[in-house]
Length: 440
Image 1 (cartoon, rainbow, N blue to C red):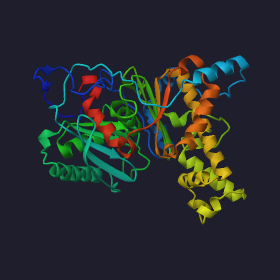
Image 2 (image 1 turned 90 degrees about the vertical axis):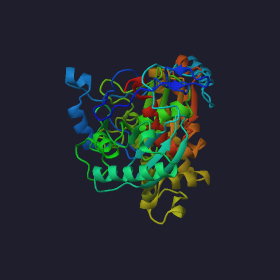
Image 3 (image 1 turned 120 degrees about the vertical axis):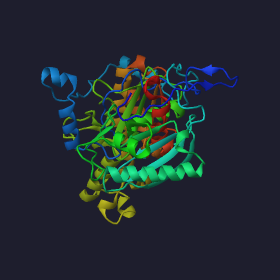
Image 4 (image 1 turned 135 degrees about the horizontal axis):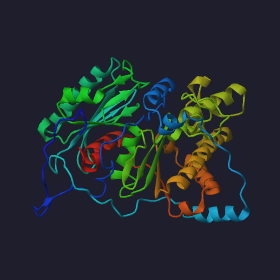
């Protein structure tokens, strides 16, 4: 049991025929978080990783290969040309990579402690650098009530008090008292230790220390069980629970927004890796000689294909004097955003369309590697940049078709995320209803 949780009494949940169930009353994803105590994990945040924060996190939690062998630099090599036969096989395989919904199969339920009752909703928190979203979410993933404010800038104590006040208002609006809550889930934009409820050096949260025990702090403020998770992992859980990946046991989730992050559902469980750092999709190396990323490496996917990267590349093109309609959409180059680039691309601006083509191709390259490594049944793409639709998805699919290893690609579904702006709070609620596969 996490040190920052209070005890939740185990309750039998009645089915429609009043016979007790030994698992939660919803299909499929009770084992999403895996069995046993969850490992420490890092961040995935809208703006990406802060290099100093990531360095301090790895100094405290070095990866196993660094502890044993003294380390090694990330490596990426450009794929070698393939034979025509191999390319034809890849094309045939990628013909089955398609858009569509998840399979009907659901994950098997696991026995273990259940929520307080079939009707007990969860308090769910999506804590970002600029916005704080708090909601009440039921055991079917429905958002019953929600409210959002600007994230308080006076430190973690002020954030905890704001969550307390918003929670009180939301419970009152639904005539709920605190005793009816199943627990509190928090998705936070920063490196986190899920087991201890600690947030490490969040770059976009003012006044937070190197190690902030926000889980225990919020548990004391609310007098409720609190489960803390990094925001991209929570989003992966939400999409696997009631979103685009419902019922899919092997899923890769990637969010492309200000930064790039991700989460892996493998064998029906959230995969955190040896020390919790799995899912750093944005910091896979695409071009070793590419631009400097704020994590300290060069050529990270986030530095080349995130919304921030697209806007930067557009501003550089304008500064060079390249011919583009972006001059019309922004008075000054510093006002150019990824959304403005998308608008220009949809209006027929070749330069803007090419920027999205290159971003999609780079993301597709990384996802083709994930298909070879992990053999997922589905890849879910979310985040603000993904809302540009085919502007991003077409070059992404083309890149995957050109490079993917044929066998793992058979039957893979590439789909947009389904939960929209509520993915954070729905993912946070999933932490409560599927915590540790029945282990509290």
